[in-house]
Length: 436
Image (cartoon, rainbow, N blue to C red):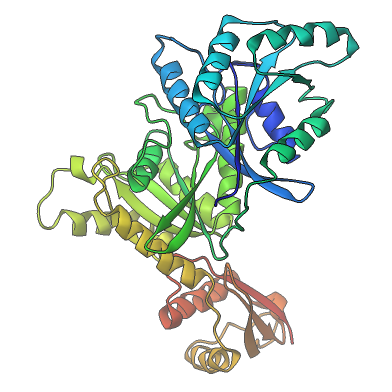
């Protein structure tokens, strides 16, 4: 059996994301005073007293809403309830019992889901009498908590693990490749993941900026384990005006930092933009491996040479990213999406590749004999040996008599020669110089 799943549901702005963060002891979900901030299901692994479970944060549920976005959020939250082994229905003691609370409680009873009623924002004893009013929902005893202050959260977690303790746990598979799907707003990141999974796992809308949190999704393809991370569209910093957008850009950046391989989506119907180049630079600045996926390729008018011309244009615009593999895809139709994951596997192997030291020193002798670094301050620079000290990304240390005099141009020469000799497709290379 899989790791137990616990979902937090409730109407908008009752504190679901605050409780999610409190359980995890870190700010993973976006929290804001504006209601409706959480839109997609947000998964995270949680551990309490040695019991592991998967926690799901959901968007605020508004039954019978006519708003298109609220309907999408409701669909996603209902899917989360369906997946969950235990559901936490969260209500707000300060606003009191609401009709939406009653409707959600009825739905849980009808679905015969194991559940716990959580009354949030009970910051002090003055709310004790109000907490008992929620027993009318028919879900049993209520747990009074303050998600922001932490009051009562420990007792709630004890009850959660007591309910799920009888379920067998499965350790996460080793060697899971974390793949972040990044790009500008509305380039098709969520559609890419949904089509790959074969289900509407993430909200897809014509409105740019629909995804706000970085959402993790376990995924298996041909026996290989992945964790797909859908991220908010990355905008230029001066365009990030809302407080929410600031945090979602921060989440996307952290998702890049935490991934193994980033699939950078660009819009084939628009070509490579300046913002696309900034995103690529950000991925490589975080020293992550990358695959460039040109999406919406089905919308491009083409002939037999269109892909070749587009590739040449990309290589001209992105000369410093020439080592990135390029795949032309359609997230809508699923064209070449499996091929993207095949390339991700290849790049991941390169990301973790280690070159034996004897081979590297043979390499150093050849490239040094071919081109020596220029003398500086009347001193000749001589390299003695080289070794690879790290993987993910591959890191090489060159030992020289005067490492402080080696200029960037020569370091770039060494980097280019390493790529010519050993490949490292889609992978940033780190080069350091040290005293012999």
